[in-house]
Length: 353
Image 1 (spheres, rainbow, N blue to C red):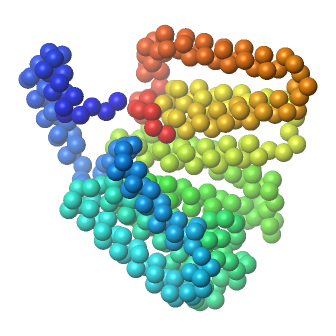
Image 2 (image 1 turned 30 degrees about the horizontal axis):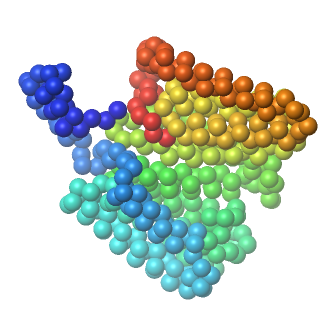
Image 3 (image 1 turned 180 degrees about the vertical axis):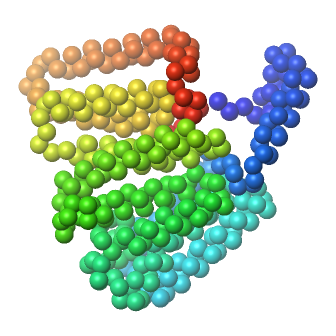
């Protein structure tokens, strides 16, 4: 739970802490914040008008130069596309560096750096197209296809994006850059699936399995980052994209038995439990979606003509509400048990991802 200097002064005015304790605490926090360099700590995410506009603007620029690029944009030619990408990357890097260091505006500055990183696939695409290498590694396509289809030609674009993101993180500790890296790694796992399987073209089932294992690997990395990270929530995007890959692969299973579907529901319940323990809302969101999908399956297939199913489901809902009330009543004891048994790095920090 974050506190501001005003909150601490209000506590001192209310007699909760002494004025001497207040000054020592403020001095300690100031020195602690200044122990690292300017780029060591990631700024905390907020949900206000300024942050929403900053992130929305960044996503619009990234989408405009990639997912929402038109055919006319692609027809500029490889050389022009590469020049455009480099110009964008340099311009946004300079502006982001200025905001980050000179103005101490970490969020807009970090977002501009993230935009610069997102120009890497466009630059590599232009180089491949200009040198005639595009058709050698896959069927020709457009820049937009990079975000839609899975092709072997994208590998070099993904490698460049990951490399650019790692370099950016070295100098600008901004968590959203991890999102760009996570997307590129997810795409790369799908593109590498044919190589791992030994098939010229991986079918849907192979890609689904790759997505599951990739998601688990990313979640494992996210937990490690949670355990080791002390400055900034760099694991947020890893948790999010790891869950997307893992949950998406599990949910796309076809021809499964009723037992496996029930296990899927239990897994979704487990995600909600993890969300409560770690205070990571992303787990609760995907867990709730999974439960809803299973209940929809029961209503549409298993109990399609059952009169008692809606009533039974209502009782389950009431039981869930009762469980929430029970948790609320014993929240302090449950929190104390978690703090006593969970490693320090994985203890709830805030309701973030």
